[in-house]
Length: 467
Image (tube, rainbow, N blue to C red; front, side):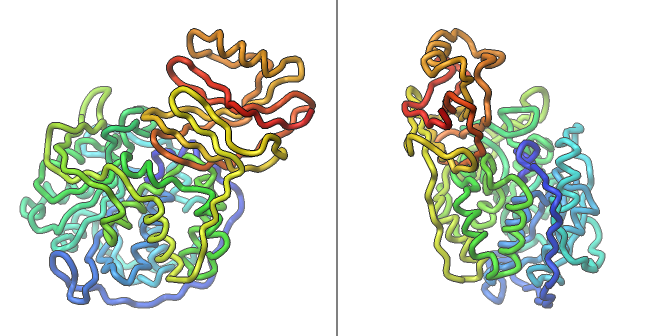
């Protein structure tokens, strides 16, 4: 669920994109048992909260001829409300020609507590992020728990939301845990920072309903976690976005993804292919590096939603991912095998190695749009800051100011104006689409800002705009 960082990233624009022509094909659902169905396809049930990355994951699965998509259940405890989420899911499935896949809604409050993402995030998700698809008639499929109990046996449940629906189903049917083929869940953060709105150590799916996650962990169902430790390796980059822009005409699914990138800010930096990575791993397990861990989740207090390793249930945990392999799998499927190339040409790269902030790129840049790549070689995040020095001060003044810091400043000096700031995640290379303006004179500088000493480091080479 991209609501984990979506609030800060979803800059909704006013354009209404309409995908008018939808090929409606009836595809019979497979009847496979555990593993693959009679047709050799993998039977899958998706539980989702229909954020931006959920939509991409759902279209990927619907487009794959190797997936037998049995059902989609929508969680009301994550980003989207129901029934808006069920409507969006049915329209996305119709776009991919899967009009016979049943869709059902779950409850709209967690098993315990009352955590929720900000309402404006949810409103954006309800409205499919400003995009529009032709309406479809979704046949009634009951509630999410009933649908899971009916379709999950023998299938893999792909859990892309808070685990409320799945936990309810496991509680309602004590035999279900041993009849499900397995659960692959995008959830948790073990050795990396979290991204929940009010709990920096927790991942959002786990934070929204930690009680449900514990129910699933303790149920005995075969469980594989794809936490932020792995998804941090698959950022949404300007390179992938540009590839969809150049080749989106290949399929309706790719066109929707390209419109999603254009209509939201997710390709500008800071977002990741959270749920698509979990979806791709169903077809290509080798895209992940995994390890066996004992995992538990805190359910109460300030640590609620924080996942920990070393105690709890034995699960398979993804600890890394192959970015190039993932991108290839995703593009191959959504472009239906059409030929494409991914062009990687950052304007400049900023590298932080724990001691030095280094700029690699042209000495002088043209004001306007640029793609800055961050390479964080440490195990802690840092802030990439682009700021303008007023004509009354110089770069030497800035260096002196930074050298004199003994604590993180509450505000920058009045002569330094931040134009953009972005959080570069640990051990990750990300891209940021930036827009800078030329000061009347002086320069625009790049800094790496930290939470602990030395607080800030100025890039060795400074891009100069203007005088």
